[in-house]
Image (tube, rainbow, N blue to C red):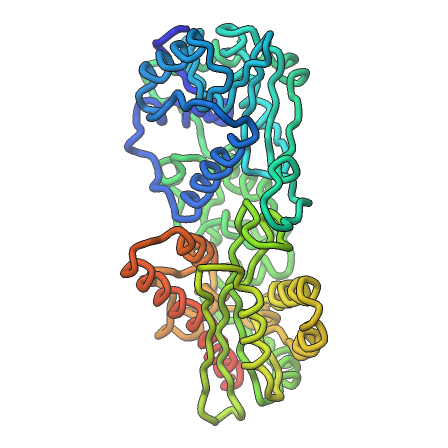
Length: 490
């Protein structure tokens, strides 16, 4: 096997997406964007799923301890093959200046079979390309019989011990990747020319920046685009945004008056250019007339483990683990606060719903922000735990949505920048309250933080994460209190 390499499997996929991304990845790695917590969760999840899938083929040996030490990994793989190893995990191969690391390779007694593990629930075109470059390299190093993708079956429901043969789907992609070999060879030839060039490819931003993945060098390539631009026009199709950009219209104030937009999009632009607030008082008052005290202000947080952790759950099922409730008897009465945050030791759902039902037993409207989310979670809890279904349905009947006046642009200010997310609405209406600077400031980070608690051993870190989760969720419901108060003052 060849030891020198110019292209890796991951850089090949980046190059297919954009030559400039490939070049920067190879020669300007330090320009890459920092990995966000949500991205890191995806990487960690992929690693965990990959390790679990190894149990489908037990008794194997790991060949690659450190992907950065590829020469050592190739040498170890060669050594294992020559010594008669039947199952190898993270096997490294080099051919035609390309390095690939296969998740699992298995000797069937006559030939080798390759298995690439994915933490997703279906096979994408990118996964086919990923497998095709692997097949190109490995089939020139070994006698390959079959190449398959192992991915997650999202219809699997856990009952007791994990059943890996049901959790994972193994699908042959041999025919598809064989058909792509000419494409792989031509693309490798093209990308090698790119990498042997002396200058960064001059490629402008475009739809390719996020297709199939957000580019690793977004911050570098988009640095000249203002923080608020035509790319932030809510609900506008991506091709239309780039059409405006291609015509030289970057700021919202540059959008021609005769450019076809929806009413809501035109409100966003006019509000920005004229620095004016839009307030449809008739619609706002109609909404407020439906809001009756007493009121519970309610918010949930959930996490979505790829590998189902609890009985009766599926891969990527949203598991509620936390809520915050502010309660107000009258508009001018004292505000009470109740909250729940599960211990990261077992299934949080029963304790979650029992505490929620107890804390909402008094009469009153239940006000949420984006009711589809909370209602869906409650219905799932009712299905999973039918003994609580009747009480849960009674709560659902009481739910109203505070998002409506902002989603429908009854009220809009330039500071919202086209968004009706509570993260945008709160600071625009109540500047003294903001999520800025919080350790946990969004649902994705909250989800990742709670999931990490199942593995965290440091008691100080656990305490810190739990305090941050409570602070974040409490702000979500306090935000609703203040947003409603703002509308009432209008």
